[in-house]
Amino acid sequence: MTDIIEAFDRGAEDYDKWFESPEGKVLFETEAAAVKLLMKDLEHPFLEIGVGTGRFAKKLGIECGIDPSSKLLNIAKRRGIEVKKAKGEELPFENGSFGGVFIIFTLCFAEDPEKIIREAGRVLKHGGGLIAGIINRESSWGEFYMKKKAGGHHIYKYARFYSVGEAAGMIERAGLSVEAYSSTLCLPPVESPVREKAVNGFADGAGFVCILAGKL
Image 1 (tube, rainbow, N blue to C red):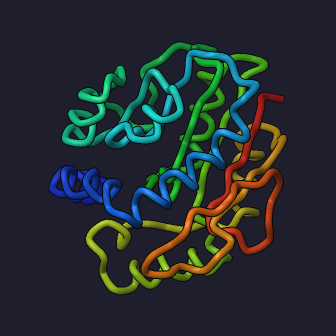
Image 2 (cartoon, rainbow, N blue to C red; image 1 turned 45 degrees about the horizontal axis):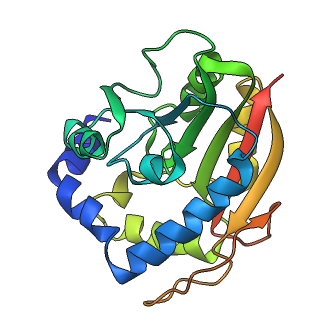
């Protein structure tokens, strides 16, 4: 876990600047739209586990975020996000503190993803919702990122990618109930991607899939 934190610390500014690239802008807007489809009935306050530089938090109106990388948190703080340095496996919040908890692109870098989901459920209010967003391993985008991992990419070499079924299974084993899906990135990766629509439900082969879950 220390290695991936150091990798994000070293590359924090470059990582954040990627979102300003033509590719980054298109993918970010596409993925944020998929998250939005599932969050319309959630009530504040919101928490993002693995808030990174705060791009998604700012876009989605998430007030609070945690991350183990100080350099990433410094950038998120500049975006107006209330941040705390912490691991998702040990959240520094009381039970039932949030109406919405978001885990976007974080499970693949987690040391213990199921423990993070259990912690998310602990701090979630009854009637609230957890939204987990993953790169679907069983998609062309999953293959694309797994090639980056195999090639020793400085960030993705630490990632473990999951299928939608595996992610849903972790959520259910953590004591939460899967309630809905949203999907996007159904087109294969290209050098200049186009913005795709986000759709309700699980679209077979979608590269980015969001899962909404609630407390049993």
